[in-house]
Image 1 (cartoon, rainbow, N blue to C red):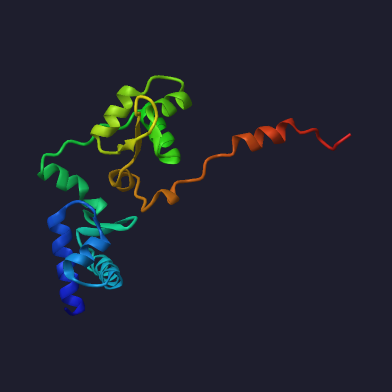
Image 2: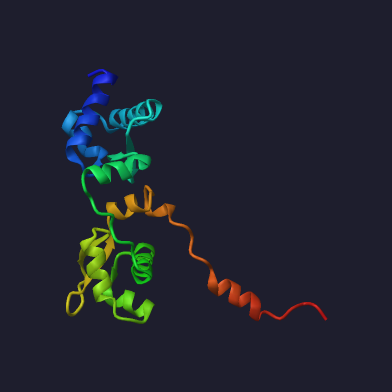
Length: 184
């Protein structure tokens, strides 16, 4: 398969899938090495960008997905009569931050950090597909542990959790304030 055919096959697979696909899975389907598919992903990304296509190829960790270019999202939404998602509340952002930075975590951990019940917010974030159940702890009651999803990465336009901004070092600044000054 030449490079042009490989890009065409990749584009067709990603279009038909709609959801993010692991590069490794695409390589298996095309009976190619992962490195060959990675090369095709890069080439297709550049080709879509060069021709200012209405589509872009997004990387989400080890997965890739075809998406609508941001500047065309409103006309697409209008044509498909899609409703804009309701914005996330402050509580939802707080819960997402706790989960994203500490995952996998239990509901009780999130509640301990926030100091309030988070059942409704966790249910809402699960329904929106931003978090998901990642398993259960081997403790009494077998509590569910939660983590973020590829949809979370897409919504925040990041490829992996490593791209999250660092947490502020509150303890460090408090320690500096409490330290005695050397001035007379």
